[in-house]
Structure formats: structure tokens, C-alpha cells
Image (cartoon, rainbow, N blue to C red; front, side, top):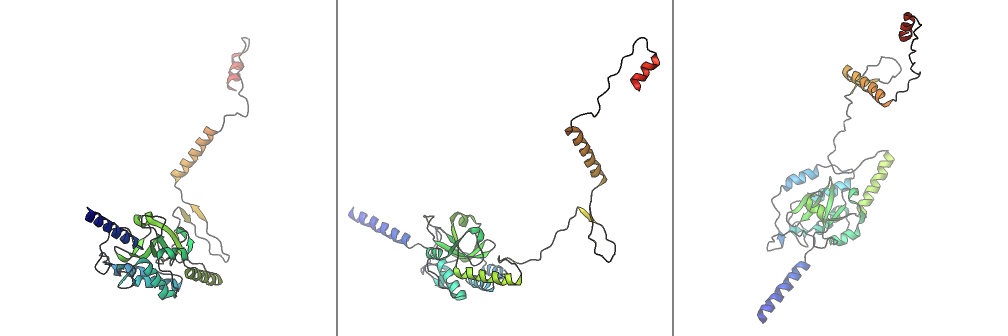
Length: 290
């Protein structure tokens, strides 16, 4: 009985220790190798990398930051890892910022959240960080990813390694905690805004493929040709409407007028005068039909 109690106590202690070492990964069940590295699931990382690299960013250093993060796609997950042999979520963000911006970040995801300027989810821009509470305590940050635009982020998933995920996925929507902007990213966007202001231009950095904008034409109007004169005359547009529609509109207008307007005759209706027996029949006829 004593040996059985000792075994139970040992099991509980091991369980508590294993839970205490959990950080920066999802709470989903994973299978680890002997080295502590989680083999990534079968994902087309090359296609993922090509798609990320095809995006355009207004701020060159932001583009370099995203490109560096994309180079880590496919690296397996490893708790407390910091290299391409295996990396965890906060290790990925730390290495990417250090290599591209020479910024040394705190090592844990919770400390990184406190280190950033807090921003709303709707204000996210490429280069910002997104934080999640993946453990049982939904108020405690335990995961972080780098936002790259279009609702996507690059992060180190415990089950798939470094991948691109969308914030709209149910798993991340349910566990979203907050968003943050590192001081270096804030300064980059501020400098870019000053440059754009001096050039009289406005632009956004949304991490999407830029496409030419087409102005839709109004198919419900017909443009009349303008005479060739020295003065510039604006084109006149005449709404295109069929004869049937025009008649229908007129009928509806008349019907609405009759229905809504109260009947108030401008002159009183005369009351016919009854003839007396002594009057001539022609006079009676005239009174009724005059």
C-alpha cells in the first residue's frame, strides 16, 4: 500500500512538472521526437513561401522582415529553440527582428506582449505581433505570431512547425488575446508617412498583391457626343429609359396623386332647380343640361 502511494505521488509530481514547462505552443496534443522537436505535418511550404514573397510592401524594411520570416517556413517546432533545427513561437519572432532590424526582443511571448505598444486588432499592419492565450488560462499569453497582412501571420505551430495561418481560423479566433506594435515597427511607419506627406502621396502597406484599379462605367446612362468646338463642353448624360417604363412611371404618378390628394372641388356643385308647373318644357331642358 505504501509503495502504491509512492507511485501515485511520483506520477503527480511528473505531471505537474510537465505542465509547468509548457509555453509558446498550442494546447493540442502533439507527438515529440527524442530531441524534443515536433515533426511538421505535410504542408507545401515552398508554395507558402512563394505566395508570401509575391506580396508588395510600401516600407522596404517591413518587406525584408516578412521575407526573413518566410525563410523560416517549414522549420520544425522545438520548445526553447532558436535556430533552423527547431524553433518555438517567441524564438522565431526574436530571431527575425534581430536579424532584419537589429532589435533584441524579450524571449517569452508574454514579455513580448508587454514590451509592445498595445493596438486594436483592426489596426494591425504588417510587422505587428499577434498574441494568443492557448492554455487553460485565457488571460495569460502563451503564443505569438508575426502579422504579414491580409489577415495572415507567420508563426511556429507546435503541430506544423513554422507556417502561415489566418486569424479568421476558428482556433485562433477563439484564443486571440491582443495585438502589439514594436517600437521599431512604429518608427518605420512614422518615417514612411513623413516621406509620403512630403511627396503629396498616400499609400497603405497591407501586404497584398497590387492590382490596377478600374473605374466601373454606368450602364444605365447614354452619353451624347459633344460638338467639336474650341471651348470644352462637358458631356451630357441622358438616362436610358424605355417608352414602357416612362408610361408606367407616369401612370403611377397620376395614380398616387389621385389616391393621396383629398377631393376638394374649387367650386360648389350646383343643385338643379326643379321647374314649376307653369314653366315651359324648353326652359326645363335648358336648366338641366345648360
